[in-house]
Length: 146
Image (tube, rainbow, N blue to C red; front, side):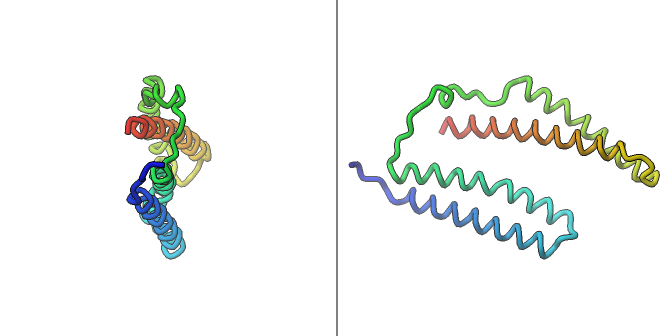
């Protein structure tokens, strides 16, 4: 059995504690300031960052235990997001902006139509899914190189 330094264990526990503190702080901020949109946005970003910290702590925990993971074919050939996905994500940005503009114009007219709201929500969800896939594949590429 080889001698594994304890620094990986300490880093793993510190990352998990940080993720838990961020999670608690985000929920407290949501309950204390329920009407502030800026607080909501920041807490959503923090809630998205929490699983990434947990994943990093799991990687350090594997290093501390000396566990050797078998290398699969896919883990060595990750190249990040495809060109088609990136181009479609970039193409969705102006469409999302236009749907938000239509929503704002309808708001100024007194909410006469409902379809701009549905269009804005649908396009925003599709754009969010595309960009989350792009970032997930990009982060997978970065973590597989390390």
